[in-house]
Length: 285
Image (cartoon, rainbow, N blue to C red):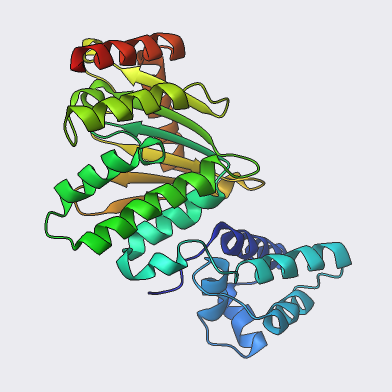
């Protein structure tokens, strides 16, 4: 599996790009002066390639960075980006696009998500997750299904139960609550879990009811991930049946932020959403 850029690697690349641009040089120019392949500096700046410490030191010298504290912070970023990630043991069952997503999600500080058909992954119970995987991949080996369920649980732990938990704001279409994934027993557990999760300080859960009619999210589910320090690293993920599309342009981020604002305005408030979910529970009993 190819190396997946973590937010640390992307932060380092963004800082190096800023230093280079401050000198008025192109990435190709700097690569030539360092004696590297012409694409190497660009790949480091884009987070697609790691950088050895001695290579980083050479770049910082060329970029005329003398501040010892800033140099040390960039060296630390380079070291941290090489660390073993929690999903490494599951590499054989994870698609690259999924690994890329969880690598960013794990280090995000905030996540805004709109879900049309399913309960958000970070709020799923093991039984619900297993039923979703079996529906999407009916021929998957049992051990592969077990591994993917474990990955989902590890994702939840790495984001919602870390020292500084992810701030999750989810707007969920009523369809995701009404669709009986795994049968009534699984759905009841899932809905009760949603009610419990909605009480957490870092989780905002809103329901978009059928009664709201047409809405800004009719084209499908999407997620906006936000990161500390540099807002230019924020990303949008949209979903289709075969892939996740990653959008990083500021215009795309602005567009999807406006869509999310319209969705959460059209959705029920937090307390009415809990009452709505409770009514769905009663309908299932």
